Image (cartoon, rainbow, N blue to C red; front, side, top):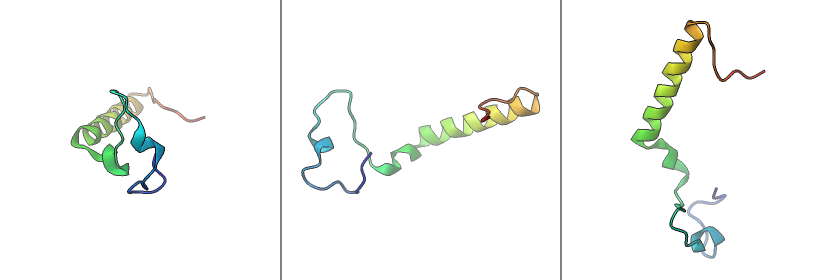
Length: 59
């Protein structure tokens, strides 16, 4: 996670050269796909609660 956006020059995360590493801005979570996944999870959780089988309980 970047503590400052845009990242300052010399930030070590900017130097990482790995094929599976993607540095994204803080708002990257808000893609259409991510928002749909969150909506799907919300609907599944509400349906499970109504059916008497709540999920993701915090105790």
